[in-house]
Length: 222
Length: 222
DNA sequence: ATCCATTGGGTACACCGTACCCAATGTGGG
DNA sequence: CCCACATTGGGTACGGTGTACCCAATGGAT
Image (cartoon, rainbow over all chains, first blue to last red; front, top):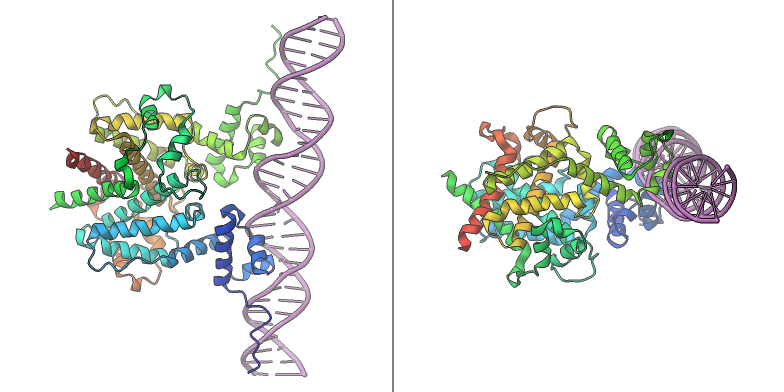
């Protein structure tokens, strides 16, 4: 078999998308340009368009591929609250691992692709025991998703992936520090206050507020 | 007084920002370029930079100015739940009036400016009677904000400001219609189901789930 | 051996943000 | 009254972007 596979590995949609993800991972989202992705692949810029229609489609595919890399745990033996925590924590980690995903998901209209459907399906199953009407369950999942993304945005605020402290409040406050806060007494109080020590699980606690609402809704229904 | 005010009205930061908002309002967010804003003002492109440092700063200012145009109602006589509904509904209307605000707020790191501080202060006051610790209150406000933006994104999904139906579920479903839903039974069920009639207040009901959680958290605390 | 569909990529265009520098303008001091 | 000057307006140009269009290389089928 003299089938030398070819001088260079042939371009595939997957290879293109992976290269774009690598560029985003180590040069940032705004560094993802067609020329740069091509350069990273050692190919011509226009060749990418053989496997991708648009830059928009490329971004969608990036989101989908990264989403697919994160799988949710086996739900066996978890109650619905634990499952929703696992759901949120997985996405949380995904966004922290790939901060550009925030901007990428925002620039594309959901749902994004097969992988996001799988995520949705997992979450719907997680909520099944709550007995919500399906559209209500979908809305809860949307709310949790938005909560995760909002929390990530706060954490990513300006500590551009430097410190490992999961503590969001600090940046929050630094941002507000030197404004004319005198007209906003409650805001000033908020900034003045250090984070209480009990706040050791900011992200999970905020999620629990939402889940409490879900739980309560169920009980008032029946 | 021969003080002819000048051949043309002098450029101000405010005039520049307003022009940019007008461009965004009727040609879309991606149409907001320096050249286009200048053209809309009848001025030179580079003149804008006398009043604005960056395009980023321009976008921030656009967000701030639009935010300032929407004022929250007098909270007198409203309980905290009514106030939060008023808060959410005001932002909801703002985003629907100016769909580009979704992308604009996403591309700028919060908080945005004076006007957003005023909004935050109003919301903090609205939550005061709940007796939350300030950081928890801030987090609730963040969650509500994210809920509003997420809901707007769903509604704006693809019915690009054509129909007047506030009904989000339809687009939702159209988007999912023709996918390999067989591997995702719960998702397929969700798509198959028409919206129940009781769903006549989708947005407010979803907000109530969150507010139920806030209320419940309070009661478990004491 | 030949044809042809598929894939790779080079060139070119319209548009973008903005660095840089000069022109016009209105103001305060002599 | 006139001049110096600070402020504001804008033209030119540069390096970047996405991508339309077209041709070259490739490799499998006939």
